[in-house]
Length: 137
Picture (cartoon, rainbow, N blue to C red):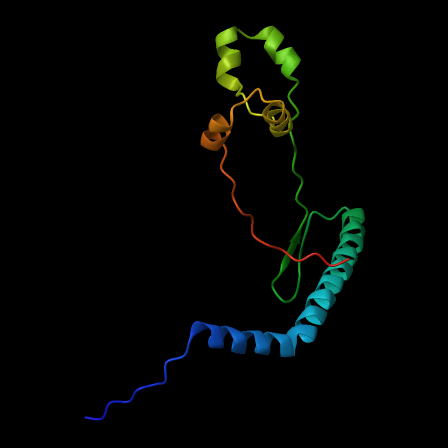
């Protein structure tokens, strides 16, 4: 039985190779991102114009020969006036249908003003990283 060993490399060497590969392709990567963003904006504009034209026809639904279906979706949003509700329901109902939320700007002002201890901040605040995105201007 023959044993084959591979040379041991340090992580630094692997990282440098990876960086070299990225550097070689960096201009292409940047160009691809910028071009894709530009294409997306053009597609959004084209869709908005096509959508407006389709909506103007008054047709609610249409089937294409390739099997796709175009349908007008009409949604609604409720706006509830809290003052009217609060004035016309019992306190118990009001408490059950509402919830207190922390206003982050006001919270930060209170922390800066020294009215909320750092101990409380450390216990109450969790910072979460968001998914990174690329902005092209």
